[in-house]
Length: 325
Length: 140
Length: 136
Ligand SMILES: Nc1ncnc2c1ncn2[C@@H]1O[C@H](COP(=O)(O)OP(=O)(O)OP(=O)(O)O)[C@@H](O)[C@H]1O
Ligand SMILES: [Mg+2]
Image (cartoon, rainbow over all chains, first blue to last red; front, side, top):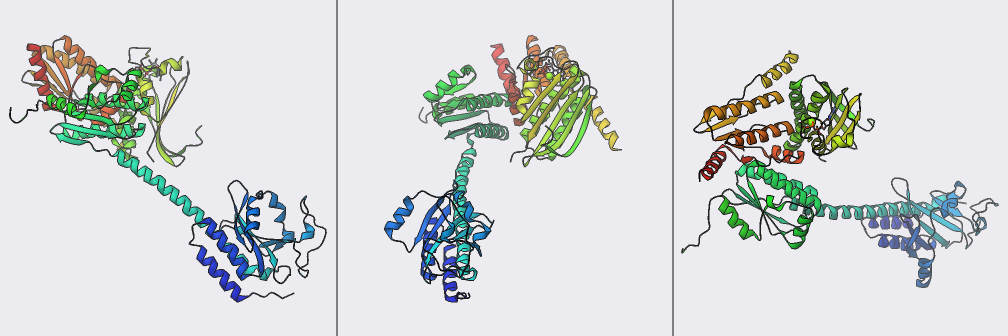
């Protein structure tokens, strides 16, 4: 009855494995190390660690005490689902945090339950033993199935305790690894957003007294276009500028909405009492503007930035002359 | 329809005469200022209020403007509702179209106010009155 | 006590007349209160009468302290400019705030054909330019 008191050496070894995997971010590595540790430090000679995937299937990831051939075969086998395993998680089979299903209670159709369970019996090669991996929130994130005890006896509650502790640390590590991945994805997204913010703050440069230039680069979406419009107007008013040159050489395409913001900007600049010159319109943008029915008479356009600057200087009453003339 | 807005605070202003249009738009600007809307949004709100309060005064003679600070889906907004029991609008689609006016206006008020606000809903029944519900959300 | 203040503010809005200043050949109209429709219409009439009386060739309407132009005021401003034009005077709207300009455009009003200037000085030099051109 009390043949398996806790083995402290085993416990310590398993705990140290558990502590070492918590920092590991690779799911494969975590599962493999746990499967190997089970075989190495417990009386069970085979183990498989599976992870519950978002689609509800259990993916076998870590293997202990199995030959390469067996592993390949297991990996190729159809994954079982949590749904199929539902019958196993019945109180009848529970031993501590684990579930032990004697072979004679299992059939291909499902689970039978004719015979009474008794821990004094011997382990049968077809018996099943599972330790579910519970997240901190109490949800199953995977399971460890273990097999083939050295002593050939059925498991007891205390005997499973060290493995269950390892299982809990495994679950925490899996969760941790998944969260880290999520965090990394979020960071990538955040960086992308920062890039957008950088673009947003596209500077309105004062190149001359009363002349501003806004070089637009990259994709312009509607909210950025709106921001740009606000920036331009505020800068004109602050600097009391007479002309703003919007250079869109760096803008590959503009959509209807952005084009209409551009038109609005020109109109609002006019209301302030200043002029807009748009430079660097490429063929695609020209097509868009004409298809939109934009009245180009309303907009001053110049081929490139330097032509735009010349025109701006002209508007502000300055002219460019070369030194020796 | 009201249930998903949580009202934090509210007030109302009656529109009885022409001056009340000014009183109302100034009050709304103060609410917008207090909620920390930026200057441009304050101006959008004030202008939309001026249009819709004027419509009450012009077409219904009198009515009421409800001002509410609301919260919905973790966002705070300024909701402004214009209610009158005037003649109502027979053809809402027509009234909402750019440039259409039954009088000698520019037909700019309704479509313009819709553009200036984030939410805009017009309900009206001929002979019963008109209710325009608008809302502007603080940026996240 | 607080009740009175709201009534007071109504009085202050309405019972002010907008001053029209005459400087050289120009009229300068600094709008400094939030006008109701009647006052705006009154101002239009006052400006036109003043143009006639002073034989003015140019009018500058300074709206730099105005924090809102709605469709009504926008129309009054545009109409005044066109009416003054018929009387051979030019109108320049000066000092519109950026937020007001954005809102006006979004509202759908471009004040087409109305002269605008960043500030009073810019408005005066614009007027001079326009009148020079007229003379030529
Ligand atoms: N509260 C209301 N009650 C009855 N009719 C209304 C009301 N508001 C608007 N309308 C009708 O809808 C039409 C369009 O309104 P809208 O505000 O868009 O333009 P407008 O008032 O005619 O001109 P503007 O506002 O540009 O000076 C009005 O001419 C009027 O017939
Ligand atoms: Mg109206």
